[in-house]
Image 1 (cartoon, one colour):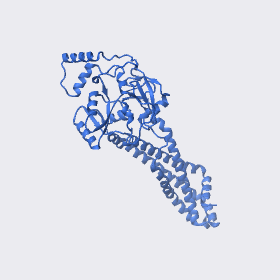
Image 2 (cartoon, rainbow, N blue to C red):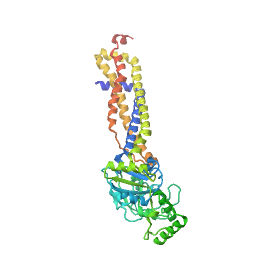
Image 3 (cartoon, rainbow, N blue to C red):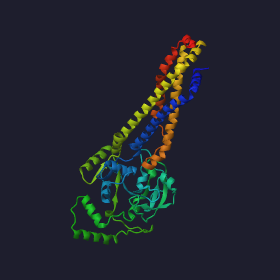
Image 4 (cartoon, rainbow, N blue to C red):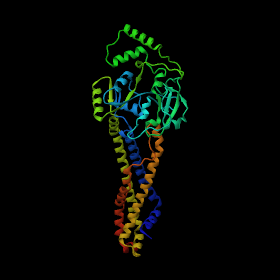
Length: 446
């Protein structure tokens, strides 16, 4: 009979206390694994690995809100930029790609965010080295739509499905215009999975998405710091535009075979996704816009990294310290459990010694018991931790829009078992020394 077998028999004799002690280790490891995995997923989501653009350009305001609304679709947009500004920005030297984005509405079914953009969006990588894969076709007609994998799953939509959007999301007005799903995006593990993309031309066709001429003229002149028009001049300009385009944009339902020509002055974009020739160009643009009052350029990584460090970093540290303390207390529990059993086991140990067992063998048995409790609890904790992530994944996704991979594994987890081995040695060495020093004659005679 080897040392491990004898140790297991000893633990079975104290089955309840051994199980509870090992389970306390498992709980600590479970929480630590869940914290490590979920934090790593958040860190990956809010990092350059999940964003394929150098800058996000939007109205002046909170950089964090701009990134959350444009990239993660979890925050309402700050304001809008005139379409003219987008056209001029796209023509700037050093800008290689400028993708307009218009957001704010949601789907009537499922309340998924609507993103108005151009077909070019899907020809670029959504993250470094990661390309969109589309079942069906991309956007080509104004009322075309592409949907993320999560949208298709939850709403049961497929190619050919039709939907309407709610103005401003929530309990807002439901637009009459219908969009048709022409393609399904393969899972990306990003907020794209929970988004619905529509052609920007169609987005502008929706009633209420075009500014009235008078308001658009005033807004554009204010944005570009141009002299305001007098009431007479403004009325004349409105009449000129109405005559040129032959109508004011009707706020009724649209026939899919008839589209109004929306003048640029009535169009707005929420933000612009930008790629530049080099990081130096990006920093120059960022610094230049910082001095102005109209718009801001934000490196999408900076505010998210700051959020991670300032808020989630402290939470992670606190949770890791807490779970570390739980595991340490579990180690103390193992020590107390084995040490308290020594008094009742002195005769058993003495008999083993009398039958020829060496002191080192007795010491190894006690140490083995501690290792079995720690490692058994650790392995159970690893399984429970990943099980907790698996269960929490859809909840986190539903409430935050962040895609959590339930099968994610953190490399640092491989150090948990060696750390538990050290803990088991610390918890078992003193009881083992007590058994090692047991006086055979005294224990047999008592």
